[in-house]
Length: 246
Length: 246
DNA sequence: CGTTACGTTGACAGATTTCAAGCCGGGTGG
DNA sequence: CCACCCGGCTTGAAATCTGTCAACGTAACG
Image (cartoon, rainbow over all chains, first blue to last red; front, side, top):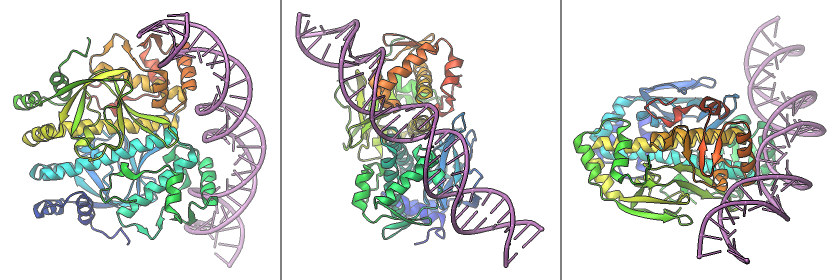
């Protein structure tokens, strides 16, 4: 149930396979992708806005966040990624990065050269479709975040984000029963849902008080999924998990 | 300088060509895509959340908005599209729509069958890349909106949105000097930047009072681009307009 | 001429931010 | 081993922004 130890290729294959079965050749093509593994500590960026990358990164362990700053220095986290995700896959077709990516606490990622991905895609068109789809799901998630931040109040927003996390982590086997590890700071959480850290703290307490979540250190447990879903106005269609989770 | 009269194929070709030159075969493949044209009046949806479309729509005239509703009935517009855009291109790889799309006032769109797009892409892999890129730019824009809505105050938000519009409309030849038509309701505008309609109205007045914009009916003119850019904390990189607009 | 959709205003309530201070636990250096 | 420091978490109170409610103006239109 730990994740860090999984090989990059297994993570990637498993994820793509959740959409459609890969042929042996396709699986082999993924297998053959050269990956350079690196652990990045909190505080450093994995990629920075304005960069013109020649590679993209597959998350192997830990979480990462996609973020941007306003002129005033306020930070918005526009996406959180979990092991198996490729947060900068967009760079395959967009020359310059329009956001930065940083690890939460610390995380290990595998770098894959664009050239290698392109070749694999050329030879196996269904891989193209699979990768394209990945980027589309990311886009769908950011649209939902837009709804969340733009129209829901902070309490609901947080409940919603927790719902999303539970499902996404479950999809990669990182949920144990009804609890999962969420090694993320309240400030980061606040930047993700567009509130101040102070308010974030109060909302968290409210959620706990209402029995929607329980926390122990970085562990979060959700005693009543349906209740949290309702509190978060959560409908998982936007995650496009073919499995059809509740 | 009008747009509505442009043929679907010209619009599409022109847009893709702004990224890289198309070969004659590629251009022909686009030309051969069967398009069914339809005008959709305000109030109806072009596609609805939950649908499983077998086609996607190219905007020919007017604007459209991508939106979702919360359980409380609040609407967030997560994207606005202009002629030449394909707002539901995602449906090519995501079976079920995770948002609805509606015309602003009224607009005419061209429907293209997924099957036809897929065939064109198979035969001309660079078209795949071009379409994929389109969806990536859309995703980039929604990330910027996230920053805008999550971290900037309403005044700045609106200035930012106006900046974006100016550039996007300029890119499709819909800007005359420093003025452009924005046939959009204040309520819609408000739903796009996540404020109430009342507040939207007041911000608009503030922008006018500060000389950042002038309005006459649906026409908006920007007397001082640099000033508006600054007020909106606007940096156009996220639009990925290769031309390198200011 | 009534209806309707949209824009405008004022007053008030509420959600969130900001500022400031205190607390807690873990790590480091003396 | 203990003092100290620092990041992260909590709390309270006041300041602001933004939303809500309600009413009115206005232009387009059948």
